[in-house]
Length: 294
Ligand SMILES: [Zn+2]
Image (cartoon, rainbow, N blue to C red):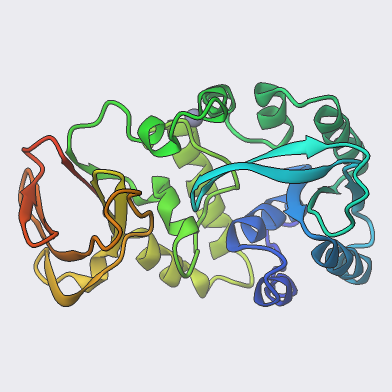
């Protein structure tokens, strides 16, 4: 088996928004045998497109499709999306789960999901860390993913950019992450996996993406109340940034509709953010600032 994945054809699917970049990372791992099956939630048009694409480029891969359709249960944040299965649906427009990869793994993944899918079984089948699969039980019981992810941290912390899952869910969505919820920003299994995926992209025909991905992973997460902002580090000069226009949160508080981030300063052991006409500081309880820096 080769160490170099040919990923160029997948850019077609990215451009057509059939898949996201995190899915491309998974396809790369599939081609190299680091993974045996991929799970995608797709509408009928995208399913048809992916089937056509697979016939053209990877006819050896098996595709199966869930017998059930998916319906959103709650969607508290743009990246906390929960769905439930509906069997025997007549609705032909709804999303279904598509499984693609090596025969036995695809059949097994399909069966796990048809049977009701236990979190730790699912994680193992998709080569996701077991610790993350176990913790997912908390998130599916409506605990906020972000609270679980940053649990136990001080209000200000420097973190490994490989663990920056926000990069994969903010424009331009570049990431080394697979498509799962990590149990913690400190999850060593996730960091190791992302490092391995980074090497995989360096060795692939998309190696020129590495500089772009690395830059996108260098960013700051600002949490204030229920709102969350994301600022790339390369927008800051000498660890400070101000803007008269400000930026909107990537996740908006339900109470304050027009909260804008207008300034940010990173100090040695703390940070300050200008939000709603006022400076807030990480030594106060309300503000949390997490810096992902190489
Ligand atoms: Zn984990």
